[in-house]
Length: 404
Image (cartoon, rainbow, N blue to C red; front, side):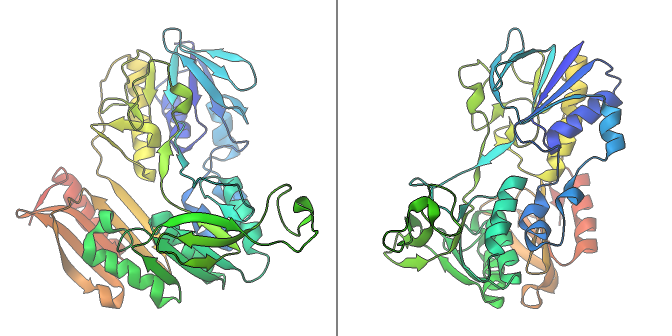
């Protein structure tokens, strides 16, 4: 291969590029990124960056020496708009085309949004620019924050906003936060974390609409203090049960969708992501998928660790021209909420039972295992990093199912 194009200047895209060089690829390497930033670490955006504990410079995933060592052409602020699989030619938003012998799809995912009029003060949180905009709003003094969705991102944002002294309400459509991921007992633990820290948690209700605040009569929309030009400010969140919540800032955290719109009609198999095998290889020769956008064995792994590891595997397979290595890593996720680190590894099923083996949820420090027919399927910990690491390793050695 003389030219390889990595589409997505993400964690997965960066590690795919690094792996290509490590495996001896010395041809032209082009990295296309829709954002203007070089790859950066996303998990701190909802935590340390939002609270001001980390600067943007400290989010960088590669230093100047590593960037130079890649010897790559960076096309930042450039969006991929189409792919012709037979020729592996990428159409770019600047009107150019990029022909390559190999293509790495690493476009990640985009946050889901709510329908309706765009309002100033309504945010999603996926990119550095998103986090900068949200932090600017939060820096205007104490505000009323409504977080829609109590998943990991929503919970982390709520935690950060509470730490900053804001009045925070979390709205969750399910009966408990993180119920599908953790089950009822451990979801109740996460609910208690919110209320322990003065955050109002409203569950079992959705959001019907977002409504603007009423402006003083005669004030032009674009001249209203602190608003984006041409946008009205958020004022109210209407819930499906008929209640209205006052809001100065709204954060929508209702999940993500794979960034595959630009591949529609290309012939690349799509099904809630780019369909690929366990080695990242798609049905199109010379095209691999990595990170959040890749769907293998019927699932996508939206996790930091798997983004790195799948990228390394797919890079090797791309160079080999066939699947010579597969990825079978254990799903792993962590979340920092209200000063407590929650860690989850494994594949919990809806019928699994949970057993606390160390500590207790009431003390906000414990290790628990999920079990199915005498085997452990997943491990969960709160502020127990060393016991969790041991349990995670045991589960990984057992191939994801460990004997009790």
